[in-house]
Image (tube, one colour):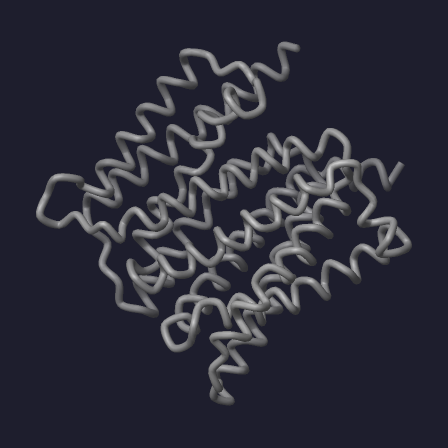
Amino acid sequence: MEQVMAKNDTRLGILLMIGATIVFALQDGISRHLASEYNVFMVITIRYWFFAAFVITLALKQSGSVRAAAQTSQPWVQIFRAFVLVAEICVMVMAFTVLGLVESHAVFVCYPLLIAALSGPILGEQVGWRRWAAIGVGFIGVLIILQPGSGVFQVAALIPLLAALMFALYGLLTRYVAHRDTTATSFFYTGVYGMIFVTPLGLWWWEPMTAPDWGWMATLCVTGALGHWLLIKCYEMAEASAVQPFAYMQLPWAAMIGLLVFGEDMRTNVIIGAAIVVAAGLFTFWRENLKRAAR
């Protein structure tokens, strides 16, 4: 009875999700610092080495062996998923160095809207007019952030938008493979094949790192593993519908780090646009849950 109760603890699930958003925001701040000093590919490579070791350890614990964790009837989709995610991480970290944490996250937060928009053509899911309206409103928020046609518009602002599109594709592919593969299998491919893809690039652009920055690098690796562990535990404790809205809290945490640590600016259009995007994303999530409940 206690075990059943533990797996339906919504309050604990929400706390774990909030904890994960704090850890991921710290990870983004450290990534911004390191990628400003060293090549992006090298930073992501070292991070993925640790992540792959974490994934393999988890696979051995949950599946009993690496072979069991890697067992899938759709290997090429899983491998492509891993490639999309590691490419997205590289693009997003690059955005941190060009735009900063505040504006990068303000644009990136539109990825749930992209998932909703692409779920129809890619997964064949039905998207009603209300969700399409919310998606349209959300992208008005993105335009408010980007300010196209104005003197302050930067082409670089499209970098986090590309990252959001890639992360949305990764999310849709994750939904697709989940019909036949376990979470452990998907997690295994994400870490191991992501490492395989990025390692040659990291080694090619390798640079010597100072002792203090190796300390930050070690912290980055630990926060990466800890964040994913918190997410896993979060979804074990509570349903996704209860905890997913709290994932948006990564935006204010990252913005606080950007403002307080890196001295970034918070422009009015970014605040207004981000608020519109988050509100639209929460609405689409709410409509999706209503649709599921009606089935």
